[in-house]
Length: 282
Image 1 (cartoon, rainbow, N blue to C red):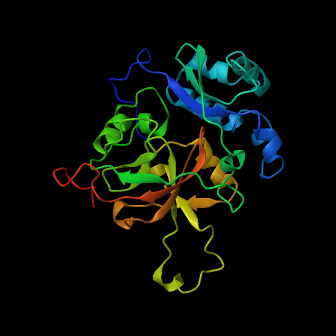
Image 2: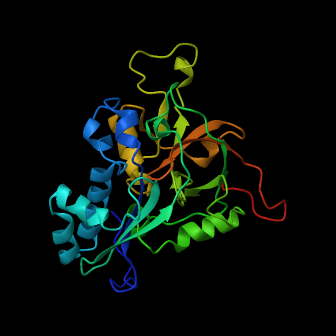
């Protein structure tokens, strides 16, 4: 695993996780998942978010943050409850924890949505607008700051700007790529691609082929997203290295994150800013 850059100070960044608070989740989803406890509260995949924060604290050797995050999940939930302005509404929560173990939660209103979109993609879920999915024109070197979610997000902001995505409200995403040309993750989502089957299987799927969808392995350098873990647990996808040369302009894909759930996407290999810029790496 990559080591933390020597220039990083525990005083200049925090670990974060963003999730959806939605009172409709437990009522609409019920027992539709392999692990009902994950969606039995208004906090979407809360145990996974707590685990992700804890793993980041362990990586950065933040003793007090580790102690805070090892508390009972019920106690952690009670702390989050104090930050919810109105429990009858939906909120985008951003949990922020520093090296001293201090926790704050930023709560912002979020648009209502069909809670079935928080399940892995199925015929039951509605189809929200399809996002444009670009490929970053420059590589990003994997590090502890790509493998864990922190406030040190300069690489992701730069990738979005290179792709012409200037607002978080845009229905667009950019795939971050490592120096080997492997897709790491999206700038704010986990991507899923149709499985690349060997030519011998194209005319007839093998019984042992596994799920139709794949997501990049953590060894490619991306972070262990909560919806990624959920999709793997539910059997929606498996892991497979995806390189830029594997991608096809116009192909369908899926994206997911802890606030929006699962979103359909379409790969766009044409440079969004015009021919004067360097095309995506191949």
